[in-house]
Each structure stands twice: as C-alpha cells, then as structure tokens.
Amino acid sequence: MKYKVFFRIFAAFSILAGLQFVSCKAGKDSATAWKQADKIINDIVVPQFPDKTFNVKDFGASGDGVTNNSEAFKKAIAECNVAGGGMVLVPAGKYLTGPIHLKSNVNFHLSEGAEILFTRDKKAYLPMVHTSYEGVELMNYSPLIYAYGQKNIAVTGKGVFNGQADNENWWNWVGKDEYGFKEEMPKQTDEQNLPRLRKMNEDGLPVEERTFGEGYNLRPTFFEPFDCENVLVQGVTFTNAPFWVLHPIKSNNVTVDGVTVRSHGPNNDGCDPEYSTNVHIKNCLFDTGDDCIAIKSGRNNDGRRVAIPSQNIIVENCEMKDGHGGVVMGSEISAGVRNVFVRNCRMDSPNLDRAIRIKTNTLRGGFVENVYVKNVQVGQVKEAVLKINTHYGIYANQEGEFIPTIKNIYLEDVQVENGGEYGILIKGREQSPVENVNFTNVTIKSTETPLSVENCEPIKFVNTTINGQKY
Image (tube, rainbow, N blue to C red):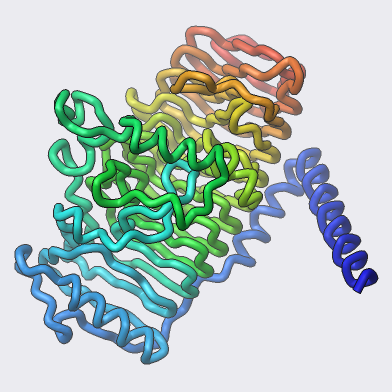
C-alpha cells in the first residue's frame, strides 16, 4: 500500500513537472505557443449526434408564445436521450418555457425563426440545482439552460434564446436605479444574499448547505454546462440574460461557434469559462453589459478548494463591441488561469472599456500565465489596450494574504486606432511584480497616456509605436 501511495505522489509530481516545463517553454517562444494553440484545437472533441430527429411539436409543444412548453421540451429531451441521442428540433415560432435541462447525446436545435421565451415566473426555476454565483458554488435557481454531469450535448441553430430579463424581471435585484431598482425592493447586496454567500465561502460550508433560491435574490446564469464533457454551442443568439450568459464550469472540450450575444443587463458577461479546460470560442459576436469574455477559476476560498485552473482557451475570429473588456481574466481567479490564446479578433466600441484585461487582488490570489494575443484590430476603447491590475476591488476590504502572480503576456501584430486613456496600464505588487510582458509589432495610433506601469519587470518592445513614438 505504501508503495502505491508513493507511486501516486511521484506520478503527480512528474505530471506537474511536465506541465511546468511546457509552461516555461510556451512562455519563451511565441511560435511554439501558437503551434500549441493549434494542437489544442485539433484535440478538442466536438460532439456528434445520431441522425435522429425528435420534433418538439410531436410532444405537444406549441409555438404560439403563450403555451408553456416545459413538459413538452422535457419529454422530447428525455426520449432523445433514451433512444441514444439525436436532434431535438424546435421549428419556427415563439415558445414559452421554464428552464431547459439537457441530457447526454442531445442536440437542442432551434430552426430559423424559432424563439425561446423563458418564463418570468421565478418559481419555474425551482427546485434548486447545484450552480455557482460569481465564483462561489451554491444551491440556487436553475440556470435557464442547464446540464449537470452530461456528455455530448449541444445547443445549435439559427434561432433566439430570449431570457426575458429586464428592469422588472431579474435585473432590478442588482440594486441599481438604472435597472429598475426602487428603495423598497430587495437586492442582491442585502445581508441574506451576497454577504451570506460570501460568509459561507469563508467558513467552508458544504455546497449542499448553501441554499438560496426562493426568498433570496441571486440571479441565475443563462446557459450553464456544469461538469460536462464535449459541449457545442453553435449559431444561436442569446439576449436579455438575467446574469452571466454562457458559463461552462468544470467542463472539458467546449466549442462556442458563431454565437451572437446581445445582452446589456447587469453582469451580462458574454462567455465565462470557469474551472474549464480545452475551450474554443470562435466566429462570435459579443455586445454585452459586462465583459465580453471573462475567464474565471473560483472566488477566494472556493477557488482554492476546487483547485482546477482554467486552461487551454482559444478565442479567434470574434468581434467585441460594448463591454467592460474584450478578453478578460478574473476577477474570480483563485485557482489560476494558463494558456490563453486570442487571435484574429476585432474589438471596437466607444462603450468597450479595455481590449485585454487581467484583474485580481490578494483575496483572490491565483495566477495568470501564458497569454498570447495576435492579429487583433482595436478601433476604440475607453480606458486601456492592456490593463493588468492586482489591486482590483469594487467592494471594501479587498486585501488578503494571497499574493497573485502574473507572467508571460504577449501582444503581437496588434493595431489600435484609439487606445483611450492608456495604451498600457499595469499595477502589480511590490512582493510579486508582473513578469515578462511583451509587445511585438504593436501600433497604438492615439492614446492619452502611453504607459502607466507600477511593479512590473521592464516591458519588452519590438517594433512597437505608441502615439507615433517608437519603444
């Protein structure tokens, strides 16, 4: 028995050593890194489905916009799953429903002209399920589209998923006037809501005891594959989301292809991979009320408990319009992020705050390493082309004992028309300066302040021009 334990420990250290070798190698050689990105893409398993169709109308569904189709969708998905898989087809029409729970080997397909209207009745999103809120696991309202522990699932087609969130439904819980909040209303920052969840996180309370749902005010995510393998989201549009839009958590082999996200509510992040590996986001449009893409890995103690970094994430051929950031890492990042590749994207809006952003603090801790950005066109951003902040905080008391590390950041062949306030804005820590930031063939035509850098190794510039000056 002792020998088995020793072997397992030795094997674990060997794997970690190998990962570290790959990490260091990737951090030194951009060409090697992009070959690594291509290999990751080639290795991602995109689900395939049997050629069988289950039309929801055969299960009693009605596209009249009034009939509740929850049971019809549930029956179609269950029969498809039992039959070994295939396509659950939603023809053109407007379909009112409660949450949709996907099962293995099911492709939920919206025909062109099909719109799913998620009910405004919050009781429909009960019973509670195992989900997550801002990087902390809990039992809460079901996500609008949910899968737990499933394999080979897809949401495809040319139709629209409409969460029907607005200033009278879900959004006012954020507690801000612009989202319909009135003084007498409950809000997510009330003591029984977020503060209670934060305390449960700090105390390490088991997830099954972190119960919220009815009587509380924490909004559900839109599409959440939780602990799933081989996930495809293709072609569809998401709008009017209660909270984060696409949230693959603890999932492996995730492809998001040709998806449109137009949703300007509070915390309406476009796509937030969390604790996830091998994620390919391509050919998408993000026009959001928060970060377009935000890579996560748990908040504070929860991230350290789960200890699964988000890694091997490729974003390419995407367009980012409104949002707090184009591609962002953080702030819920306590388990770390590595191997992020962004190429052939366009980011442009007077309401886009930053192009590339990394945000954490000493409560989150965590690490970010090996971030590669290539062939990106930036029309206009408000604050910065690259922002790295290890002092991030929108709440009080954001200082702790977990010093973050950030290293190996590469921007190459990036063209910027208007970089906003800062070209490069970096705020590291004296105890742990930001390491190995590289700009190669970068042009920022206009920005108010080219560089604002604290606690960072000297940035390496090759053929880079900011405001007409070579660096």
